[in-house]
Image (cartoon, rainbow, N blue to C red; front, side):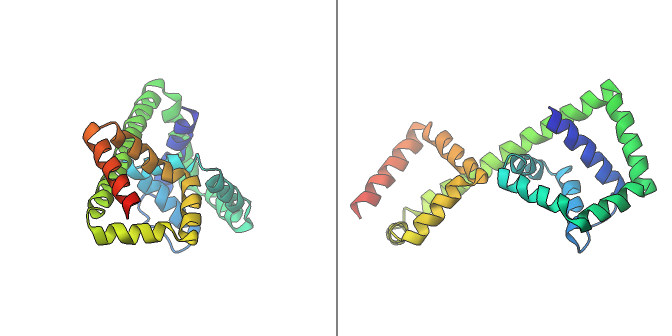
Length: 194
């Protein structure tokens, strides 16, 4: 819950300070525009929360925060009246237990909706891939690709990516459906016979 509280505070401040801004050309403003968008898009919010669990992503964020240009932008922003007003307003909202609980409930609901959308997207992608594998030419191309060592290495790297876990979880969910499990097993057998 601490991460959700931090996210609520951050999004509240960034929305207030950069509320009407469509995103600038530099990375700093683009990042803030992304945070603003995440506060309005459940799927993007869920992806952001997943990314916060990725050690590589967090290492990149730390590296960015150590950048003197980023620090200068933050100091400049912290001195602005908009930032100070937004921080004060956000603190007041978070200090009110009723408002804080409402904001947290809204954020958790939005996060759940986003996670459901990501999961559905992964299932849909896997279903489309399975449909494509009904074509013998596509199956042959997939088998050829799977025997390529560079593709195998790419797959190994992709399996380490926390975002790929969504697809692994979706496949696990799909395997719970007996008809889908049978279809996947049949596809696996056809693949072996090629």
